Length: 263
Image (cartoon, rainbow, N blue to C red; front, side, top):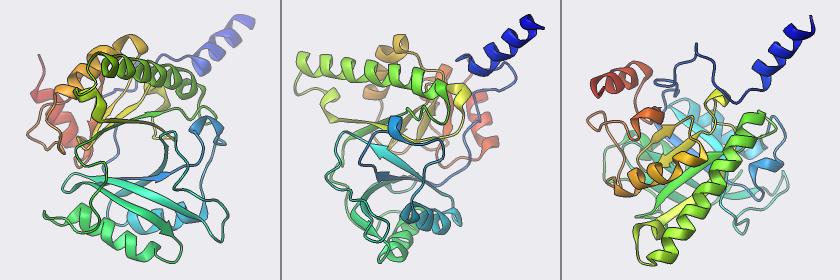
């Protein structure tokens, strides 16, 4: 009996993914990934974290394939609390439009910004709305929402630290190099705790899973050497061995793409 209990606990708390959950094609189909600036890192989030503003935006964007999450990049300057006066900046990515930024999302303008996000995700270029101040940047986000699942807190935290250290090392070695254009952040729950560490790469739209600190140098090499644009169904998977899927592609297309680029 004790042996069985230990086995069950090992499965529950293991950082290793179950064999029955394939990595590829594990990304929900979506047209846009929308990040609200958080005043604190995901390590401080409760298991289920939302705000009235986030819920209001998610209700509208769900209709056309938007996913709303929280991101922390080390700065809380553009976010303020309080349900009634809640305000935050927004950075969103779409398969058609790349990056777009709004400095202040509030309850009073949520309808307007939701519509601009919809057009950014569904209309062909040229896009509408504000130009992201991070234009030309590469955005890398790691899920570190430990209260939702300990695997994301543990492995996600380790991978985030490894990315920060590796980027700092590259910048010291070459201050004008490609590492200097990376925006590194942490995000709340993305889905797929068993794939921790989960790493999202934009504007490419790539979702990576099962990344470990030891994989960080090669993963960064691939990211920094890739063309900086939203990827389409014609582009091979980025970091194929870690590839979960791609923004803008339904699950069946993700699986076909991965299979088409098998070694």
